[in-house]
Image 1 (cartoon, helix red, strand yellow):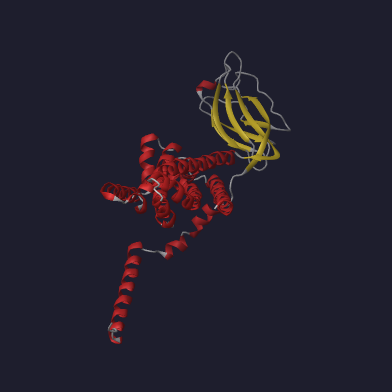
Image 2 (cartoon, rainbow, N blue to C red):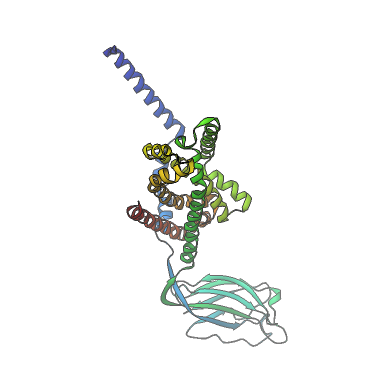
Length: 382
């Protein structure tokens, strides 16, 4: 074989280098990297990341529900003014009476640090009308201005009241509602992956034999079955799992875990089917030839010569795909597939980054745990 001259090698090398430089230059032009923007916008990212790294895990437990009422005659002189408390948990209204259309200032004191408060009117007829819900400040105090409406006037000498319903918090920490929601969502994700992997395995096993040349590619009919199954697996594999999740979310409902399971079943079936078929095609043909020579039928050959060789590979692929499906379930949830991904997308879309941080922490813990678990299962059973 003639050797390529050195000058021709040099020219080819130069052409290849120019082509590579052109491709990367085109990539930079298309992606439009903006390092200046990355630096100038970093303070915004710092705030968001700070909240993501401060997950909402625990909260102070509620020990007492305290209701504090104070009369507010409307109009002034329609009922006797009530003297406010001078110590302890209390509210003060300034002025102590008013007319329709006036604004009054309601202040609270000694209500407990960050205690949740619901402020409402208790009307003269006993009915209630909500004003606002909020948290007290670090000193257990609040100040709020509210309008006096016509519905709040004194009736039959009975003045309306302003009521502050305070959830007094203790120093005992309990799991936050966000943590409880995240645990529920992550369990949904794990079971989505488990159910999808199980169903996909049941469907993929027979498909893998139909897509194995050494099993079915014999005769005109067997060859047709082989190529049809192979092409079907390749065709479905070309559809991304996110696209399938969007389609099923539109069918069964946005946020439904069932849609995510259906998407995972399809994508896992074709992936396992291809991997299983390659495992079947790579087996030692010796046992097959030996059993065939003894007059064993096709089913006996598969059961006694093929299955014992492929079980370790099959188990390894199944465990691996369950691990993968837990990760994919997180992404599928972003497009309406349910589970922890759906919860995470809701928290990010509503700017609740502390709760989003809780879900991210749960995802990291579960993924690490499954990595360890799958590795141990492979050691023990494969």
